Image (cartoon, rainbow, N blue to C red):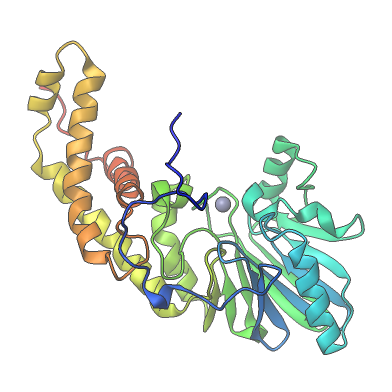
Length: 326
Ligand SMILES: [Zn+2]
């Protein structure tokens, strides 16, 4: 196990990455290390600079969507601050799970036993499987669509197939001109490893078009320090489309045979050499094009592993695995 060297101030010494575009950054955090802002009317979002949550502050109580543990008890402070300022109750009556992942749901148990938890039926199945006391399974589940109405406000929940996870849902606030959809588009930033740690590559690549089919102006993407726009989703789509085209071109251009021959009896050595060469050829122009456009595009392993995952999807899902042996 290796760890990065640490400097005199205890911070890790990082490679000399390209500067983060200022447009990728959001508002400053307060002394408690969070920011809460109004999205529209009585819909608010909370960030710690890395994770995001949202809540509706209604006359009948608060509807919280996601409870990332990194924000944790600051969610309580953010809700209290907004409820007091607006003269509405601060009691969290409903909690919506975007998906089952612990990094977005691990503070769900902070809001007491009388909260109504709502999620997709697959979220319930996965949370029962995971058996994590920090993420109680939802009491209310749905298959395709669910309308949540609290205090005169409305959220439309919908499942349109697997993407980042099997259970990841679209949360539309029609009265607030807002869509919340987590872990696919990172506003102003590249996805992290392996298409943002996603399970279904084809579903992941198709999801932004589904998001854009909804009417909205504000987009809560679940990560980093600011809200997203329709332009952010379009830039993300172009990044993925460029990787997709580049991966296909590289697969078609590089002859695997010399790599397998050089691997000799170590078949996996040949496989690695071939797929690494395809990945490197496919990713290089993407890293060059998006450095300075999307934050952290020059962290090669993020674009490389995303390219690798999409290249595998060409081989495994879309039939570019090579010719049938004669
Ligand atoms: Zn996730």
